Image (tube, rainbow, N blue to C red; front, side, top):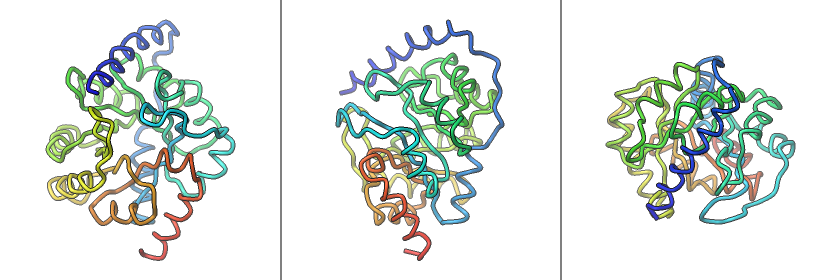
Length: 259
């Protein structure tokens, strides 16, 4: 399955060339909104929540249909930030969804894509994003893209699969949010327990101030608590919230009662 990710990045480079033709450049957004929102939720609830608008995925195909209005109404009372899929081929996403979501609600929005070129970041800043996902993958200039994101006012969320990589990027770019993914991108399989181990190791190495996101596999309030207890600052909930928006309220309720 490594071929899928490599192909996704190949297509992303072609998309970047197409996006560049739109001439959307020079936008600057209010800096640090996404990271600040996660820090505020972390302080308030013990765990911040990122709710993700995701209609499709390569592992599940079509997930669920919800309008943006429905998603915002159901998710915003229990979320500290939003994430939206921008990638069109496998995730049914588009920059237009990013622009609409950022315009329709004031919660900071993460643009989630296979970012391979600065042109993508330029467009996402102009579309109203507050943050951009940058995946640590061979051939991707993680440092250069993260620094470009910061230049535009976007918070980079650097996605890794190991504590070692989390520490590497957390120390190299301390302004970044660090995301640890339970999903093995080469195999597209989720190993939640392994992710929690990596989150715990990353927290021990990076200290109490780093913002660390457990990025996938949260499908119950108890799993959210396990992420919190392993040292995560925030969780990203995607497929499960599209299938059952009530999950976010249940997670918040459990956090309020102290778990």
